[in-house]
Length: 252
Image (cartoon, rainbow, N blue to C red; front, side):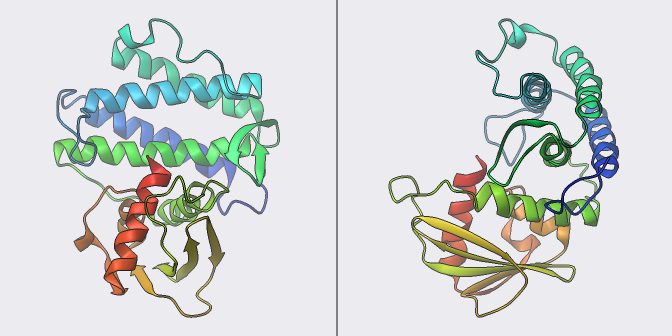
């Protein structure tokens, strides 16, 4: 199975990471479902487990239908045991991805890719972020593989941040600036104004602010899962603050 040039990692790698990260999330959840998740106020580990299970089931339906399921979620799903729901959803998702392959046409939120390959990547990255949520709740955080974190940085910048979503009536952070993100020899240059965000690979041109550090730390910072002291900054504090707000809008 191959993926288009849109993606840096292989389909098999995404499946391997999805299986490994989901197993770790399940393992940590066994430490206690009631533990609060520090980066998601109001969430507990049970919320994380239920959320991930429902995301998996939703994507199975997206792959089956080639479109968003409506209505969603299914009646009674919130009454299910969280571990039972999770243990049912994961193997079903892995089977659905393998059955679809990477070239099946389906609904996605990436304007450049409407293939099932999008969901290989998205589900691996969805899982690693929520694995960290569960780990933070129990203070047992483990590293993210550098190559997966770099790929996650790329994805959160586009399509999550850099897609065609913005207009002045939507954003509360109408910044007008260029931000550079750098991790392990890779850079992205992000140009944002009130109505658009453009993401370019590389470090060409001047930037008003820069965010840099270990790939895992940068990725988690972009997703609001770690504090400012986990990464490095240079340039305008105001630009970084507005960029943080813009990211929050795009990833909630």
